[in-house]
Amino acid sequence: MSVCAFPMQESKADVNRAIKTVIKGLTGKVTVNGKVFNSAMPATLEKIEIMKKIFLTIFGLAALASCKQNDEYKKVDASQIKVEGSMNAELTAPPFVPKPVGDRPAKKLIVNMEIIEKEGEMADGVKYVYWTFGGTVPGSFIRTRIGDEVEFHLKNHPDNKLPHNIDLHAVTGPGGGAKSSFVAPGHEVTFSFKVLNQGLYVYHCATAPVGMHIANGMYGLILVEPEGGLPPVDKEYYVMQGDFYTKGANGEKGLQPFDMVKALKKNLIM
Image 1: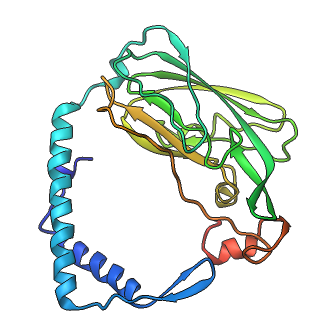
Image 2 (image 1 turned 180 degrees about the horizontal axis):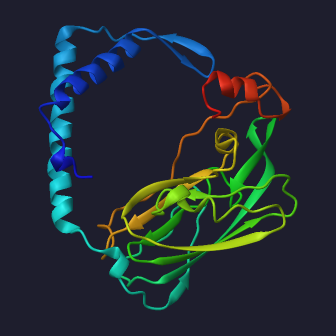
């Protein structure tokens, strides 16, 4: 979806609402890690007008950048891109990312990922059993390019207690591969897909209850680069945000189990 097609005139009301919401939040009380802080930013009309101009300027620059990006990365029929050879995907743990794809041709990309339920330290003296893709939260970063044909091998470690699967939002089709990847502990499944759309996509476990699996750490990112790769940058980092719901209070020592009640109160479990 192109930002160039976004109706900038109609977006002003949304911008106003966003700015006022942000300022309203800053002028009240802010809770961080259970502690309440008072903000010292007065919500004057003058400051609202200043922020409005800043927001509209940023949106305008984003629109221009998107138009330029659309010119540089023209629409291609990725389904017609032929693959040349095969290679094993490099998977990395956060905050690191695999090396850029560069100008390599489309290939058969073999992804090997293992689901691991493991105990780890959440904070000093606080333990938690994480459900992970590749042993970390967030899960392993996957980097591919448009036109690749991905052969995905998903293992569920034999010591795990639950079945899992994976829903990759980069996959075109129902469930993002979830139906094809349901796997019990001690087993492995293989499924394939053609990468059709460039972009940065989330992936997550889609086994019911989906929210519970995600809240225990089962999410990550898959990047689909355009033909010729992305422009070079100085540094790349892999960061995601997530919440954990424990039986104990924040910072309470010991092994903390997942708290379904707290998650339900946050409208997480569906």
